[in-house]
Image (cartoon, rainbow, N blue to C red; front, side, top):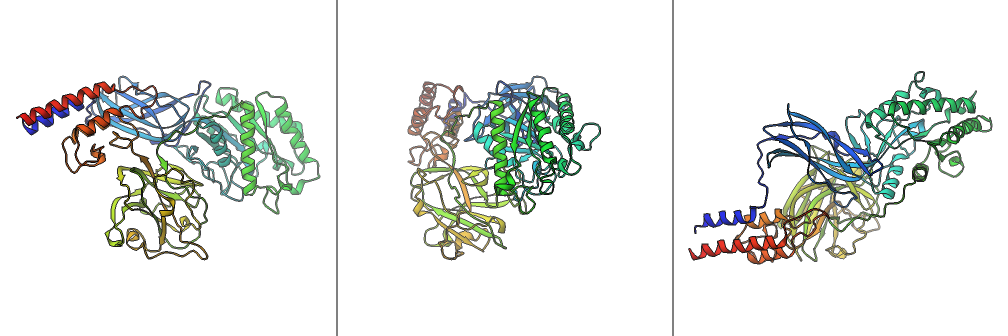
Length: 626
C-alpha cells in the first residue's frame, strides 16, 4: 500500500463521521446584534431577531446560540431559521434561553456548510428604559463603568449596542449616572445580561414629558419602539426637582401629568408597562417652601393608585448623608451614584419578585491575572509586561489588554493595541522569541479581570511547557498606565506567584522583551510590580488537540491529519508528548472521548472511536506489509 493510499485510508477512517465543509457561499449576520440584550419572557426565553445577506447557492439557513465561556446560559442546537431563502437576504428569529452568547449563522447547501458568520456577546435577560431629569441622566460627579461585560446600552443612533459605560449615549449630560451600578448589581443577582436605555434630559419639568404637549415624550416613545413587542421589563422614572421651583407643581397636577405619560407608554408598547417612580424633589433653593412636599405627594399618588407602579429610591436624604456634590446638594457624587443604583436594583428585585440565581461559573478558561488596585497617571506611552514559568502544561487561547482607566475605552491607536506573548530566552534578552502578536480591535468584548475590564482576542492555541519562562507584553497609552498593581487571587493557577516578575519601560513595543530584564520604571518607595498583559488559559485535557475544552470529532480530525508525523506537538495530536502522533495518542483520545461536551449534546460513542482507531491500525499494517 502506498503512502498516499495509507493517508487516504486514515483520513477516511477518522473523517468519515465528520461533516465536510466547503466555502462556495458567503453569509453575513447583522452586526447590530453585538452586545445587544433582549427581554426574556415568563418562560425565560426571547425571540432573537436574525437578519443579513448571503450569496451563492444555498438550500437553507441555520443558527445556534453558543454560551460564552464562564457565563450563564443554555446553548442551543443548530436550528433552521429559513427553509427556502431567496433574493440574497433573510430576516428571521430564533428562540434563545436567558444567558450570554455568541450567535452563529450558517448557510447550508444540502448537508454541506457553505458559509458562516457570528455575532458576539448577545444577551437574553432584562431590559429597562430610564427617563426623567438630571439624576436619571449623566450629571453625577464621576463617570461609572459596569463591573460586568453583560451590561449594555444602545448607541446614540439606535443602530447597535455597546458596553454601558458612562456617559449613557441617549441621555443628556457628559458625566456619571446610576445605571452602570444598577446594571452590574442586577446582573450579579440574576446572572443574565441587562440592557439599559437611558433617555433622561437635565433640568426638565414633568409637563415637558406629557404626550402631545411636551417636548420630550418622543424620547420614551423611540426607546419603546427600539425594543420590539414586549421588549422591556419596566420604565424607571426619576424626576421632580424642577417641579419644586416656584410656583411649584401641586400634587394632583403632578400625578395627573405623570399618569398621562404612563398611559401613553402602555398604548405605544402594546402591554401594561410597569413603572418605577422615584421619590425625588430636593433642591437647596426650594427647601422649606412646601413645594417639595407637593411633588413627593404627587409621586406617591401615582404609586399608591396603580398596582403596576412601584416606588423607586427616595433620594431626598442624599444631601444630608454625604452622597451629593457640594455645594449644590442636588446631583450625586461617586458614592451617591452607587447608592442610587443599588436602591433601584433593590426596588426592581422586590417588585418583580426576582429570586437570586444560584448559578456559579463552571471551571474553564480563566483570566490568569486579576488586578487588585491601581491608579492612572502618565503623559507618555509605556509598554507593560510580566514574566512567569508554568508549573504544569497549559494552553493559551486568548490575549488581552486591561482597561486600567476604567472608562470602557481600549485606547485604540492605528487599528488596535499590540499585545504579544514571548518565549523568554533565558539570561540573554536578545534570545526572546515572539510566539504570537495581535491587536485588540475596536469590536472586542470586555470581560472582568479582577477589578478592571479586559479586552481579549482569540488566538490559535499555544502550548506552554512546564519549566520554560514566558513573557506577556502590551503597549498602553498614558491613561492606561497604572501604579501599585499586584497579582491577586492566584490560588490554583499553573504558575508560582513569587516567580512572576513585572516590568515596565518607556521603550515601546516590540522592544520590550529585550529590555525587560534591566530597564524598569521605578515606583517611589515600592517595588517594580507592573502587570499589563493578560491572558486566558486552559490546563490541557488529554485528547483535546485544539484546546477548546472538549474532546470531540474536531480533535479526531486533527489526529487523523497528523497521523505518523514526527516532531509533533500537543496541538497536532501528540498527547503522550513522545514527538509522534500514533496509536498511543488515539488511545488517550478514546479514554477522554466526550470530555467537556455540554449536557444534552450527543457525541459518537467511545466504542465507535475505538473501532475507527482499530481500522486505522489495519491501514497502517497494510502499509507496512506492502
